[in-house]
Length: 251
Image (cartoon, rainbow, N blue to C red; front, side, top):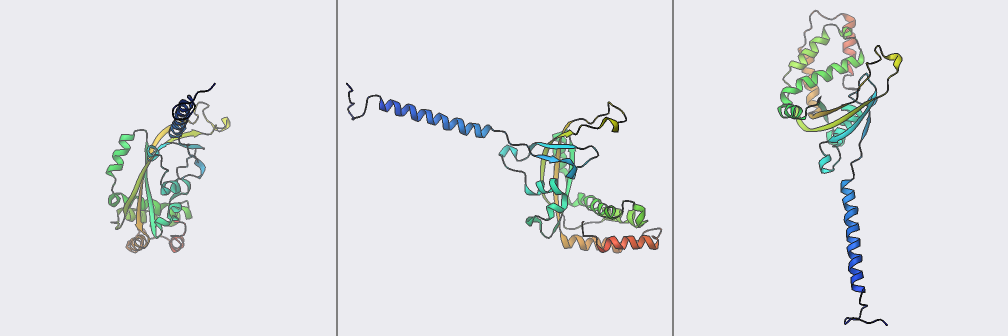
């Protein structure tokens, strides 16, 4: 025959409730802990569609990045740059009306790269970033620099020496990469032991922006100051003007 407690409940009911509460509390803690310890999915980039594309085909895997410790995603500008380069970053609403440039440095020493980041100056380092992008734009229209004659080296030299105004450092970010090369075709190897190697490295990115119209006006100022020697031929002048007329299309 069952006996009732003084509070009118079964004698073992209170203990059973406590055990159930303890069980479910432990279950919640375990589930929460497993979510915290779950590794962040690694993002994979196809190297062939990447600004870091090299002759060796392969895959880039993000092993770690600056925001992973806080379980945040990579900034939008970083993802855009990795997937589509500078022009992709310029399509973002945040950078509307600006020209963006990214300075990159890669290596196996994190402290050395961090020191490079700390010493970076938008004012002092921008001329090199600008001249490189200008150079790439002209080579996009004609792979052979001789197409432009003496104008081409004069322009690149002037752009790298020009006292650009307005560049601003807009952010920086680091990524730890794991590069896995595709298996090579043995027939393509001169030396059967000369096979691509996996590598793990750090890459630091620094974002620099400049107002679009300000960049364009300074670029025009550089063009007006040029006096290439010897003077380019008529065909070279024609090829050069063709690129200048549509310079910012695909820049």
